[in-house]
Each structure stands twice: as structure tokens, then as C-alpha cells.
Length: 106
Image (cartoon, rainbow, N blue to C red; front, side):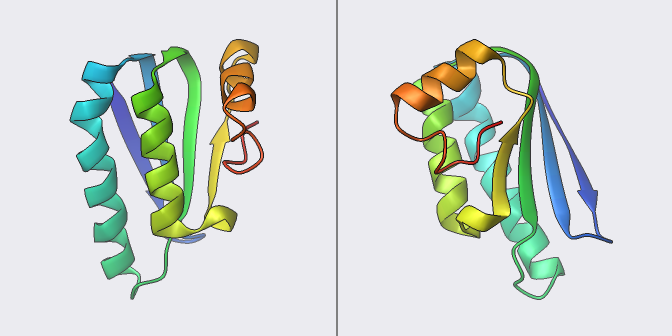
């Protein structure tokens, strides 16, 4: 499941993920995430919103989710993307991939 919150005041788009982000689930949500970002860029005159992936209720990520994160960084820029509330195991996954600092994982 995925929900999102857009805060126009501070130009941020927060995605709230729940459950397992396995390959099947991420293949479904990948284009939805990209579409929302592009939609909000148009609404804010091509200014990329700050993108926050809140994964506090996620207990598993597949490599497909990591690809979504990388693609999102390419759309918005490293300084406008972060992953928050990750469990120690998921943080370790990003660290092993060498992407913990590139994707601003906390």
C-alpha cells in the first residue's frame, strides 16, 4: 500500500509505504510514483518538490524498490530526496548497496 501527502506550503511530497515492498508490488507503484512527481512539478512550475519516502511500516524491500529510489533521485536531484524511518535491517541493505548516503537514508 502507498499513500501520499503533498504540502504545497513547503513544496514537499511525502510517500507513506506499508508492508513488503517486493518486486511485484514495486512494479505496480513505480509508475504511480513517477507520475505524481511529474504532475506536481507541472503544478509548481517545474520546480521539483522535496520527495520523502517514509518506510516506517515496511519490513522488506526488493532491489526493484531501490531502482525506484534511484530513478526518483534522477527526477528530483539528490538534495530533494530522502528515505526516512527505515529499520536497521533496511538501512543495512542500502549501506551494502553503497547507496545509504546517496539516497539520504535515515
